[in-house]
Amino acid sequence: MHSFFIPLNTNTIPGSRSLGELADLAVGLLLRSSFSKNQESAADRYGFDLLVVENYDPAAADRVMQKLDDHQMVDETLDTKQILSEYLMSHPYTNMRVARLESMAARYQGQRAYVGAL
Image 1: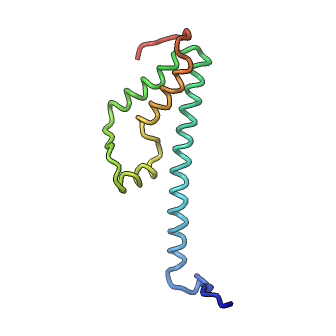
Image 2: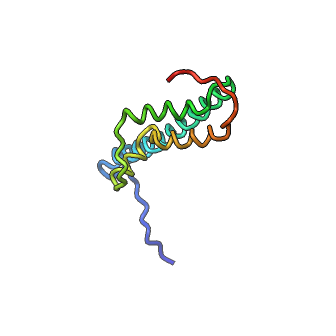
Image 3: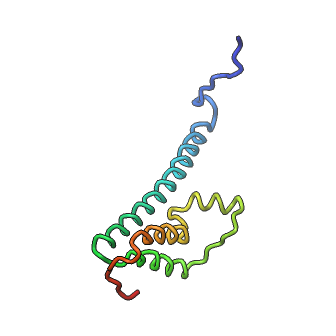
């Protein structure tokens, strides 16, 4: 059986090292962006849990996020460019964070909690 693949020594191809380094950098940036969104989501959950433990109103978290969302313009159209920019951004969309916090707060609805002024 014959192989159709030709092993390439990239060190002998002019410019291949810089192309490989560029590819490594691009993959690293993509992974780091995704990891950062995961960190932001974990921080939201941690902050929410602190509200609950300290007897603050759990619904306050989504109200704060909603106020932030009111001050930023978010384009809701999803074309290819939008999907790529969403993947590369470091924070999840604020409206997604609000929805997640609202569903978390719903579990504590009716419980007594401190409610401060926003």
